Image (cartoon, rainbow, N blue to C red; front, side, top):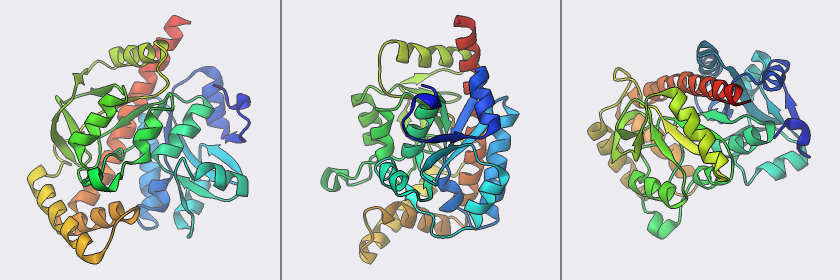
Length: 313
């Protein structure tokens, strides 16, 4: 779908617009990591490194944000600086998107809202450090990330390092299976856990050939499936955190969150910060490294898909 066919205002940077028009590979990126991740100026610096990783792999980065009642696909360095140094910019998930757009405000996109934006703009690939998923205790809380729901609705392939280890990853994989979302592991036999190389759950498919993965994605959509494909790439060995150490920190953090009465939307941020403190900052460092590595892999996957599309045209 081209940006012109959408009733929602979509504003592409000149670079992104030209790449889409010419059929060159583009990778969508979320802006939530800029506004709700690291402190300034580290958030702006990391965003620049993520975009550079996409370029290194031969694709064009398209960081997505909301501003002035429009979905902006591609942010200039000045835009990134404004969002990175600003305050009070809300996190906008897919359910919040129509409200923020109608009001004409600003917003930073999450995985879910970035998937909506990517499909509207005609970008088939999106890269992120990790997906949201089924939360621990979801059998009583019904806490399931909108990332998973949106994956079943948007025809966008997601390249990531699996899902956050603070989640129930077995149930996350069960949900993806139930919703017929293909999960392909590249470079590993296991489904990775964000900053851990393995979640302990074997991936249903391992494919290391990027051109074959491109054919799988194209075939999934050719078969009429409305949703996306998950392509995982584990963190590098030198960046990964030991799963046993991370699990111990998560267990302690969950107990502390219960004592503090933290739940709902605030739980993920609370747990991530608590685990980072418990590991002496190593999980935050691993998070930054995974942001960059998945962006590079996402660029390679998008390039392979563009080659496949060109060969079939």
